Length: 199
Image 1 (cartoon, rainbow, N blue to C red):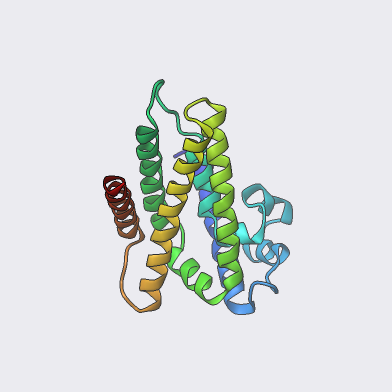
Image 2: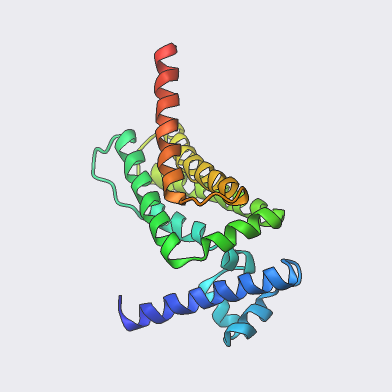
């Protein structure tokens, strides 16, 4: 990572930390982009080079995840199953990076205490499904139905992992989101293979 990328990553972390500080102190509605920018010592315009809204600054991971998933190259002739596995690996990598780079425990606590943030995350998740599905179809990798199923399964794995992590955090249990992700994927595969065997 070059100096420019390091500065950009540091500014992004400062913006997120300031957004979280302000929401924890004043609440979501009273927190504005102007207040966040002022606390970081940047202009509103600079803020928007990093995030498209205050909510994006608070819950930044999904925008980066969409970009990583839709930008993933797949080999010619890749099967829907191999595409799904490759996308799950992107999610794994993203979980690891998010744990290192973002204040995920603070974000999780805020999502529990500020229901609007959970709604925003859910809305972003639907955007992920639409963008990923469109990307897969536009590149001719899978059919429309396959693209929707793949995108929904990826999003479901992500959502279930975070929901389980949030519940564990709420109950005071020490937990790691990536472990919940692996368990969600394993359970999904087990349920679908069992369901297919029964039909």
